[in-house]
Image 1 (cartoon, one colour):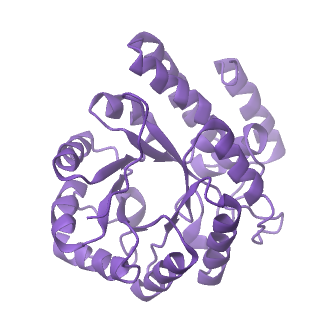
Image 2 (cartoon, rainbow, N blue to C red):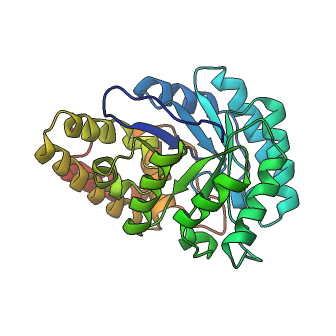
Image 3 (tube, rainbow, N blue to C red):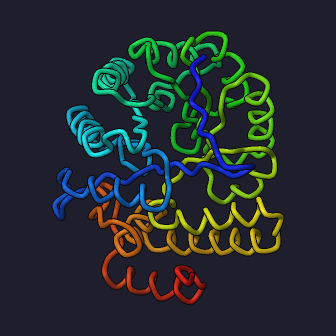
Length: 309
């Protein structure tokens, strides 16, 4: 295994950001905002950008676009941020191309969802697919991105972790984006025993995951609410669990509010244009939040207390 752990002060939590991909008004790739995105992450203390994943609409990008995006992120990160490149694809061949490219340009690590059209039907088949991707970038840490609600691959992440750490020399852990709390607990236990890492990918579970021993998370909500989650964890570390719980409830309310008009990704990207970096609309076939809906979103999250210190 290759280590991909992120040191934290005391018992804190490193918050890695699953960044948005910027598009222009017509849905074309727009790389100009990437420098501002990197500056924003550095400003509030996110140590890494996770690019081309769900929040980054990687499945809606061509392979050439994904490579151009990765190259731009490596250029602007310039050693001040890690860049973790999501290389998952319906085609293993394209995943391997993306993985090899990520290694050549100097990415910190690669990550991949399971193939999501013709899906692996067993742990063995899934780990074989992951091994094929990891082998295309043999010097980079590899993490499996577990998000069954999107891929339709409903295999336990904990079982993947057990098999992958034996099969894949560069296996570094699991990005866990599922609501199965028992499986998450099992992953955390296994990771602690093996030196691999669990990257918690469900923001609504952050406080619970921290209490179970998680020390790193990856999420798209950190594009505009990273400082809120940072305060949440700070209060938890200091033992002020009442305030940590209050902030977790606020975060959940903001997430639910953002998702209401056009879905979570569109809502997050819209709020990011106000409280973070404007990355334009989501790409078709997704629907973007319109100006009237955004005004209502801003009013509601303000009423909830978001952005108030």
